[in-house]
Image (cartoon, rainbow, N blue to C red):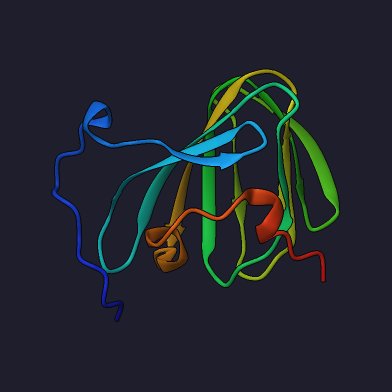
Length: 127
């Protein structure tokens, strides 16, 4: 069980600040509890969510825009309304083809997101 404190059950996006991750990417943590976390990530056109891996299971929906999403060496173009799922420890990343937004859900929560923001490029782990 995590030591993180859960957020309220109602989430008002305007009350949650954006975290600037640099290189045209920013995020806001919409909410979390002991087992899951919801994060909105906004990309400028051409911004990259560098290839990385983590032990969390992740699913995402494209709220807006068009992205080339690569998961385990396989790339697919996804548009508004499309989604994807990333199993634990699988290498993945995205490239925003236009300004766009991803809504990410993680389980368990990304405790590393609760500290100071780290640039996406610095999170890269291409092992």
